[in-house]
Amino acid sequence: MESQSYDVDSTTVGWNKSPVMDHSSRFDPNETPTVNSTNPNYHPSSSTTTHNSVTETAANKATAELKKGQHHAEDIITKSKRLMKQQWEETRHSVIHLQKRMKEMVPKEASNLIYWQNPIQSGIVFGVLLSIIITFMFLSSLAAISFWLLALLVVVGLYKLYNYVMATFVGRVQDDIFDSIFSSDVHISERHAQAMANYIRTNGTSIIRQARRVFLWNNLTTSIIFGLILFASFYIGLSMNTLTFALVGLVFLFTVPKIYQVYQVPIDHVAKQVLDQINQVLAKVTTKAPTTGAAKPKKS
Image (cartoon, rainbow, N blue to C red; front, top):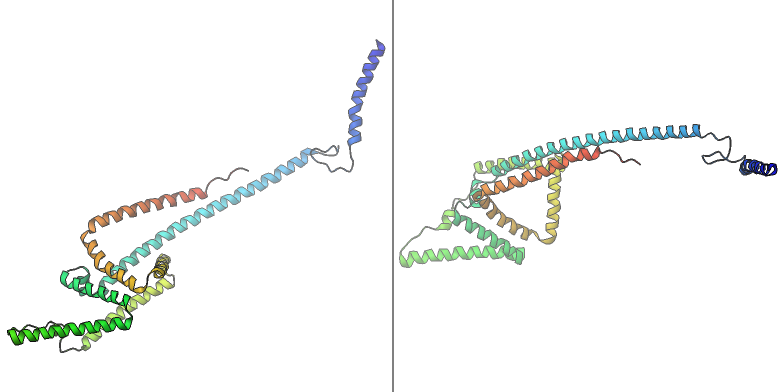
């Protein structure tokens, strides 16, 4: 029995000694202390604390920089919204002023033609201008000018011949329409020349000032809109020439103002609904923009 206990004790002692011997055999004195190191000189508590403090400091700095960036983004969005609103108001006032100036620049006779106050006169002018543009589209400039001058000469000659026949053989004298249109006392008086010069000076000065504001970017929104118009005109010019554009503009000039005058109430109602929808969309976008910029960062 004693030998058996000795064997157990010896075995136990061997079990107790074997880990120590194995530990001493695996220890390397030149090994760099790490978390999984077997070096007895390694103290994990101090290094872990230092690592955690460095990580917290970096996280605090990142959070502070993120908050600073969020506030900066909110300031930029607020200033942009204020600037857009200011530029929009300036553009609206510029458009209203331009409409008033256009009404002042257009003579009353031309306005009566555009709005068909006298349908017969407006129809004659529209038909003649439309025919002239179509002629220049299919003929050269020299041929078109010669054709229309010859047509005018022939028409006036035939009318004079008709009046002569009616007065000689029928005995009925009629007033000459062309004599009433083109008076024999054709001259430009000093008063008319001065009025025309003042008209050109006033409107020319206004156009030059407006062009200066646009090309020198005094009004950001107006310059951008003018640039978009020029960009669209460039692509339109690639698909059509000036005469085609003039043809479309002539039809637009003699149709759209009259249509708007007749159907002004329903057109204004539809336009107001569309503008309200656009303003609602812009309001939603601008109100959501700061929220997006101030979103909390995701944890790594």
